[in-house]
Length: 282
Ligand code: ZN
Figure 1 (tube, helix red, strand yellow):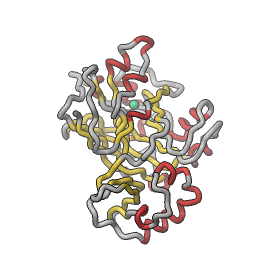
Figure 2 (cartoon, rainbow, N blue to C red):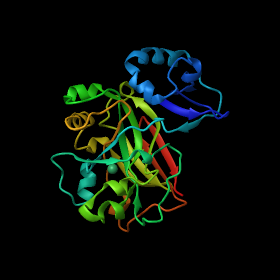
Figure 3 (cartoon, rainbow, N blue to C red):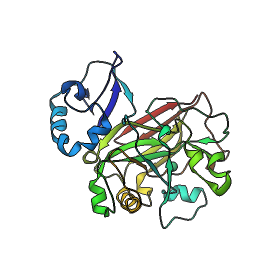
């Protein structure tokens, strides 16, 4: 799994995490790109060597601070109402075509960074999501082409100010989804080859240690390859772009009583075989 980190001396690097620990590959071979976004773009040529290097490089003995796995955010595409259990809890019909929206690039933060609860919202909610990281340019792609263009998977929290998502003219979602810090991702990108079945992963969110969402990606209505193929008919997708694939039941706005994030909270998102986001709210 690909991780990006800060070393104790303040320098930045990336490497691969295994059960042995983290191999600092950008230190092991300084000729490799320093940017994980560039690494993903060049994965076809660099990938085999990087995977070999990961096998032979011992785990770093330094304490590494894990950062957002992408150093430069690309497009952040999102799918709404893509879990059967979530559509049912919000009394929405099961969509027969994907509901698509964007988050802006100012939202992307790392797995332990702070989520800033804006003073102009009283309804900041959490959404645990499986996030697809795109590895190749896609335009007018078939589902099979799209499946092969998936670089890997990470965990994400599609933080959403409900009062700005639903209470504004035209029912626009963009503003409520795009406050600064509203897209934590990480802690690692599991390569496509490391995830045997992306449609059978446990996905959970916990607020201050209490489970809020606890589901499985088996509840997904539209699968990642279908979504990428669909989107690529309209938008050229680029390496390093990400797709938030939707959230399962249990979000704060759908609970009785409703639950929203406030400063001092800690919200966690855990996805099986990928890892856990743990973001304090300030
Ligand atoms: Zn979402």
